[in-house]
Image 1 (cartoon, helix red, strand yellow):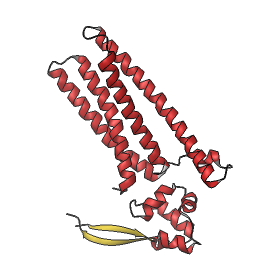
Image 2 (cartoon, helix red, strand yellow):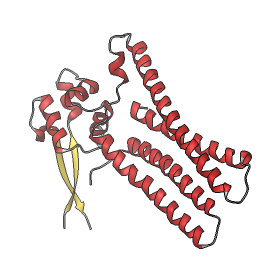
Image 3 (cartoon, helix red, strand yellow):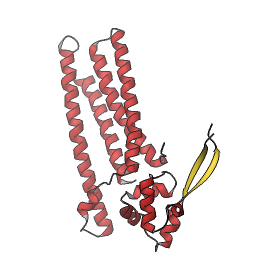
Image 4 (spheres, chains in turn green, yellow):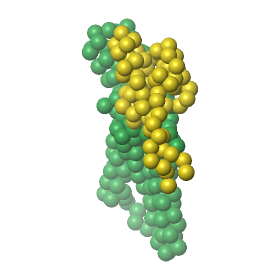
Length: 159
Length: 76
């Protein structure tokens, strides 16, 4: 597994972790069931989980870089280029894969948004719409990562 | 009707003749990651024209000596 694939894999794990943690929190720790406060509850919960997700992502990428550089230094017995090993080069293939998988991620978000609008038309509670949008964003980022891994394994052609 | 083009490369052969140049070394000289060189060599990725010229420049040969094409069945 290359360093780029490791980075994508870590991002997928983070996305799944945030999604599962969100479901557990909402299912077991929700204190309000209806009324005006329920939208506020979901808004605060989602904001907290977004910030937590960003922090976890940054920390895990820092730990991954340290792990890669230490592993390379031990394998090569060369401790002079440790900072250079931390760098993950992003070239034209990475950018093409990023572009194609971003499209897949956006498709999930788009589908989620349409479904959330349908729930409003069908007179569901507004918090359900909010949840569908949030979950579609998370699912979009997870499937974007899965698509990236797929393109790295299978290869990618221009055009 | 346009014909489908299959691009092949001789990077493995050129690396061998360049004193068994490693993929990492070629990647560093061409300014890309080793993974991209692996993908190009395996035919999983067709590089941009710019990168193709850079790879040819590393070996000091013409681009046609690195990459070859073959016309395949027609695209419908």
